[in-house]
Image (cartoon, rainbow, N blue to C red; front, side):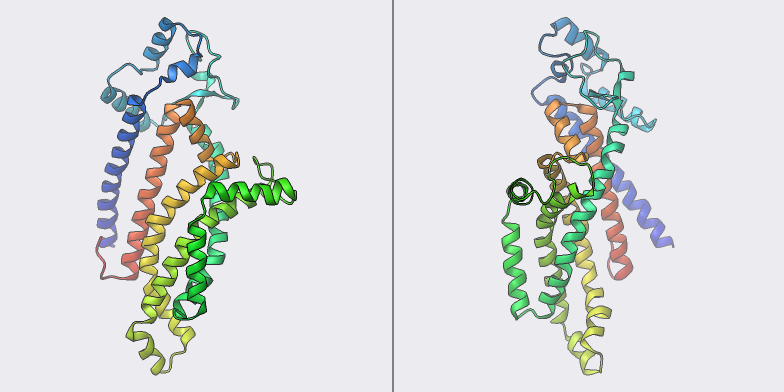
Length: 329
């Protein structure tokens, strides 16, 4: 109990510093990058005086450290701000606002935008990860156990082939084959669960090669250890050795791989896939916000994404120390 308490306090304090650093970097880069969001908010016909007045009202002309401290104070009160562009009804208000700009009450709260998009992203992530697991886990285990036979070659060739496929190209090909040409599946947007299938396949294609290689290498490493043969000599079947000993020992490197690498790949892949398929999740919301220079949306998504990665890594490290007490984090 004392170990767990000390572990979580230390790692959470480190995680808070990481999230703050990420938030400050994103916050600063958005403000020093070329382009002025006020031009998008008011439109190309806005006068310089109207643009300056709106920028002052939104606090965009204050020093960056002052803006960041004010932003942290708002977050501490649970206020992540309002979108510069999106109205409460879901449409964009950019370029159509008057000289004073849309009042904050007419602009959508960032948390509301994320809350509407998050279920779609979670659905797509779960379906894509499940499809990847259905292929990767049995093939990876089989390749690891028979690492000198045909399963290992199949796993190697398949993972090498899949990892070389850009997800943009895979998405376009699947849209053409399964939707435009045959009409078997819908592809663009979301109206029912059928719209998830093609995007989930694209996500699975991106995740599967890394999962196959990680699982096969971890299992093969433990199968080649002396304890595997010693266990069989003592009368334990290959099935018992695999499921009770090999997979347990392989769990630590797999957890580290899945926690750090797979979650990062999943988040990045979802952004691209959602944009390709106009899937109304966090990824599409974020990419549109980048194009529209919608600072509050980009900042909040970055904070949430870094927080998720930090807590997943904390959970993975704690699980690893639980499995193998020799590890120290």
